[in-house]
Amino acid sequence: MGRGDLSRSQTRNRVATLQPGCSLEPEQIVHLDESFPAVVLLDQRRLPDEVTYLECRTIPELADAIKTLAVRGAPAIGVAAAYGMALAQLRGDDMKEAEQILAASRPTAVNLFWALDTMRDDPTPQRAAALHEEEVERCKQMAAHAAEVFAPHAKALTHCNAGGLATGGYGSAVGALRAAWERNRLQHVLVDETRPLLQGARLTAWELEQLGIPHHVIADSAAASMMARGDVDLVVTGADRIAANGDTANKIGTYSLAVLAKHHGIPFYVVAPTSTLDPATPTGEGIVVEERDGTEVTARFPARNPAFDVTPRELITAIVTEDGVL
Ligand code: MRU
Image (cartoon, rainbow, N blue to C red):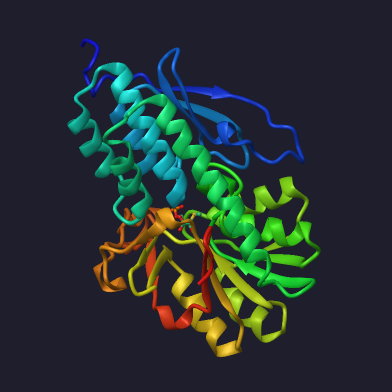
């Protein structure tokens, strides 16, 4: 098998250490190593127990890493795909085929398709690194806007992981929590466990621990009673795709939270970069919701496993992007 063969398997794992209390730098989450070459990912499937790096040297390996959630979260998937296109060019791959393989990895996060479009005319390592940097910058800007909606010493609830891991650095919903914490506007965070793959309990809790932000993990089903007891002042989540009318796809369970928040009179905010906006899809009905393998829910019985749901716009208090609070 020669250079340019997309199917050659060369994935490597590497164990690393992170200083406790340090937040992740963008290149620690995903980067392109031009010397192998490989897209190098912090393997999110193994967190928080192991800090392991996955070196994806081929496009099918990278697509598999996206499919199996080694790298996940809408903006981070886009960033990884951008580095993937640069990797394909360095390898001398067929660029159309590389794009098709990456586009087929996950259907819901529009950032994947946005990144592939953005990279088409200039699939260089420099363009991919610039896209990564711009995405992190967008996160910082929207976090600053979002911090303004927190009342002083607010108690927040978040779902899934919309942190640095999910965005390639800083975070969207977690970025907002971070900015609010720095401005003394945040007291405490309730972290939904986020069944079935526990992005909240494994990843958000780990990131909040690294950032020193007080938090407790709750079972997803505990959200209603926490709201009823007055333990939640606002809900903040990220998004995978925002339709033109404001309907928003995010991790399964987000819609239920928005209904609960409405019932309890609690504001519900979506924090996402403009790369998550999909003006070509008029309403949430047009968003493809990924259905994952039922064994992620239970291996004992037949199971359904929709990975996302769509929250209707009328349940969302505001969508915060780098352009401000909409
Ligand atoms: O299946 P995942 O873990 O990729 O789902 C991620 C989410 O639902 C996030 O909330 C979303 O991508 C926003 S990340 C800033």
